[in-house]
Every structure is written in structure tokens, then in C-alpha cells.
Length: 219
Image (cartoon, rainbow, N blue to C red):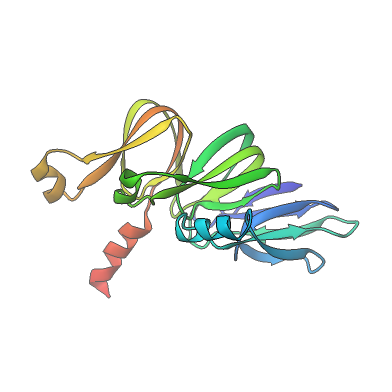
């Protein structure tokens, strides 16, 4: 399978070349275009129960789309995300990574998707009460609204609400005021998320909730 990220950080998309017999799993409605010879099957991820959990608790779609190439020649597939922004690819090596609701786009079939309890702190911070886990070996594509920023955490780090995209299993989330009581609420920052631990996190430069707050007074 040959893949290439195109479109720049504002309008990223994934250009995929599936070799004969290869398959890829994507979120529902992620396909932008494809060769007519490719086969598409919609299926629950891990069965009906897990699919329902992912939809109503994990912020993902109920179904996954499985694209496969039954022909004897390479075929092209274009997939993207629902919002403008950057897409990234990580390659798992028998490890686990967590995504906030809506960040997952696609993965190789050797990757297992699951749902983990994120806690009330994550929910209050508008990051979702549950998080999507990706485990195993293979490539995973994810994205968010805005550009994506990599950070290596060793200790503590502060992130504004709705800006955390993904993080490793050794990172813990805590909620706190941005500053003192007066500064936090009248300075416009309010609550923030304190990340504690050691590992990699990915942040987004923009948030849909921030966009909605900016648009509402103008509508």
C-alpha cells in the first residue's frame, strides 16, 4: 500500500494506492473519490455493541468502511476528514495511542480500535467522556480542525480545552483554572487541562467550539 498526504495543512487528504488484495478501514463518509473497481463494505467495528459504544460514547460513526482491491492491478482511493485541517499518520509497533472523539480517520486492518473511559475531567474539558484507543501494529491516520502540533511531555503541560487531539497511555488529564479565579474567568481562559506524565501528545491550533463562539454573535 502506497500512501501520500496532500493538500497542505489547511485541507489535507490521503492519496492511497491499494495493491491487489489489500484493504483499508476508514470512518464512514471519509471517502472522497475512488477507482470504480474497488469494493466497499460497511461493517460494525467489533460487532453491534462496540459500534454503538463508539457512536454514542466515543463520538465516532456507527459503521466503518472497508475498502478492498479485488483486481490484479493497483487502484486509487482518496479519503479525507469532515473539517478543514491537517491530517497525520502514525505507525504503531505493538503499542497503544488514544484519540479524542472525531480524530480517527483510517487505519490498516492490523490495527484494533477500542473505547476507553477518559473520565469526567475529559468531559468537563470538552474532550469527551470516552476516548478511542488504537492498538496493535500498522498505520493510523487522524486529523483535526486546524494545524497539528507535536509535543513531548515530561512532567506537566497546560492545554486549553478542546485543543487536545491524541496522547499516549502514560499521560494523565487533570482540570484546573487557567490562573486565579478573577483572571481565569474575566481573562477569557476559564478552565484548562493539565497534562501530567511522560510521552507524546498532539494538539490542534484551532477548535470547532472556538469557531462556533466566534460565529454565533455574527449570525
